[in-house]
Structures are given as C-alpha cells and as structure tokens.
Length: 175
Image 1 (cartoon, rainbow, N blue to C red):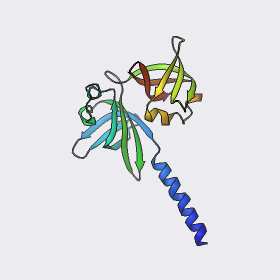
Image 2: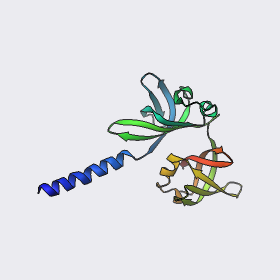
Image 3: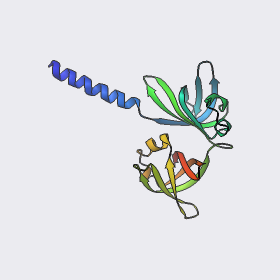
Image 4: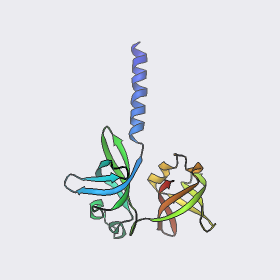
C-alpha cells in the first residue's frame, strides 16, 4: 500500500512539474509597469488583468530597446503598448518568458496559410497572400506553440522579425 502511494505521489509530482514548464500566451495592452517590483500588468481583450513577473531571462522582441541591444526589458515597455506575453506558471505566479510588441514599431505581421510544420528543424512553411511559399524559423515560444494544432489551423497571422536574412516567427494568432 505504501509503495503504490509513493508511486502515485511520484507520478503526480512529475505531472505538476511538467505543467509548470507549459508556455501560455496572453495578448493585450500594458496597463502598468512596476520596475521596483519587476512586474507588468497586461489587460487582455476580454477585460481580465494578468500580472507577470519579469526576470533576468525574460526576452523582448519588436521594441526600440531590442533594436539598440538593451538587455533591460523595462526600458522597452510602457503603458498602452500592445503586446503578447508568453509565460510559465508556478502556483499562482506568472513569469514572463518573452514579451512581443505588436503594432507600430513592433513585430511585422502577415496573413498566411500553414502548409507544414517541421518540429525537428523548428520551421513552419506557409503560403502567403501573394501565393508564394516561405519558411519561418521558430523562436522559442513559437516552437512550443506549434504543438497546439498549428498544422490544421489554416489561415493564421504570423508575427515575426527578420534576423540575418531569416524570418523568425515569434507568435501565431489563429482566427
């Protein structure tokens, strides 16, 4: 009996730790930035507010700060910014892993139809509105998002940057 309880506890702990590593995304508008507390509050389109811890590994894309090579995520965040925050969760604490700026001066966007996903190579091949085929390399958060049915999504909006002649997809929005 004790042995089965220990096995059950071990499996349960493994599931909990695996769940902590899941990256989720929220799209919304930055409501507050608190550099002292190292938090950012984002108001989602449905009106819910999400508070995220910003840590040393948090990466920012599409802002003036990243263009200048700043490692301080807070230097590029301001109230009113339209962002997507990719985060992990432990307990009730949400940790921002990546902050993608959308809109003016943010990531580029394009309407595409997904043709194929190569998880091993971390690439997605798409067909553009002009009918050409293009391959996007997947950034960390986007690579994790590909497990959410991207191959069957059909038409999506891809948010991306261009680095060293390659298009790097950071976020896919379905619908």
